[in-house]
Image (cartoon, rainbow, N blue to C red; front, top):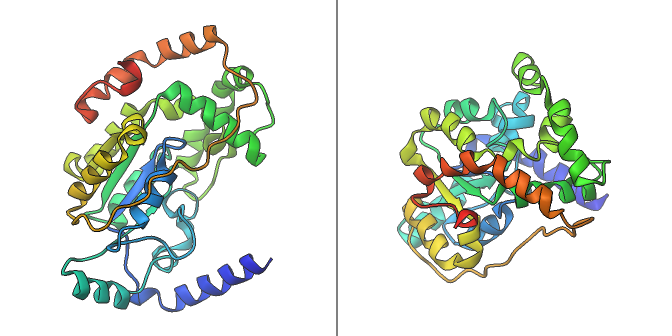
Length: 282
């Protein structure tokens, strides 16, 4: 209750001072369950990277777009703070947020391109089979999934998602529980989602990272992100994995093989984005 009250006061103050706040220079847009929280926490330790005032993800461009740009701006730090940091470090600070539904939502890309011209996008991609299993455990733990069997949830996915994209596009301010919480396999077709974003923001403003490499060599990936953002390396962040969920049951080997085959063609298309074969295909 106290936390909600503090957040309500902060949001009110944010709206009143929205005109004096910065907008994000870059976004972590996905993919869900691919290390976005871990990257967010690492980047938040950099003195020139400004996280949102209240939440990791604002979810403006997917489920809260009807609230307006002033509402969105209210979630970010004041320009006076950014100016102080710029004077101290001799480099312009950059605000950001991380909302992993942006990559998958059919309307988020055009909205981002319209409201944040020049913004840079960071995408993490993970073995889509492991991502799907992790997402199911995550949605189950949050109460957004009632089917405890991952195999059964996968069987139901096509039926659950049928028509959801058309419905979201027909009613732009609507939401879809199934599209947001039950797209276990659909979210793993990364190349399709990246191709949709490319003409909207430009290839040079998109950085696609292999989450397997991020967890294995976080320092190297972190430095690549700073280079992409044009920021100096200041300090040494602590790298940790966040939001791991216990799985209800192991995935049967037969199902794993079947799903891996389903993603083979989609995974091959990621070579263009990663510059090499995805770690889970090596």
